[in-house]
Length: 252
Image (tube, rainbow, N blue to C red):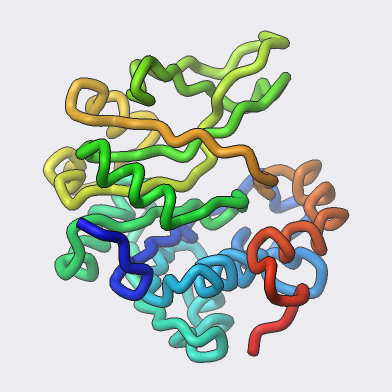
């Protein structure tokens, strides 16, 4: 199956409580925290739009109304936004499962964490996923001394063989960059109700087609006050990576 950005849907997970960031962003949903003079979530929308992906599903929860008010139907960015508002905290896996009715017209779809940015070619990622025939492809990034992330174990053929919990190791490892391609078959493995993709779902898929796609671009996760501060110094770099042909902050 050939890739078509026009038919691709992207699911953005933006319903988290953002408790670690409350000390610097006390009353705003984490994805709406400002990076420069724009909400972080706008950076992700622009990245998708610049690569031709204009059908978005936002999985909301905490302060969902604020996110919907800020982004609306997506017309400002020439995209179409649908909302899947979870009735109570459901975790990343539960949020994807709850959005299933909005994904019935696609055979596979992108999934992105709403609090991290990765410089990536979505077409290449989707093509890699389809070539593997797997259920999930995880974008991974090699990082050094990042003890707050667990690592992804990858074998020959880019197949994921396991996950290693966070440790005090000073070594270098592949970490989950928070961007995935899911086949619709994923819904057979996600139970109803709260579930975590990382803790509950991915480990169950190790023998059923879980692959990694190694990335090398700029990466930022605004989940902690330290990294949120670091993001402020990377504003121009982030917008250039999101949309190389467009100046920072321009939204047509």
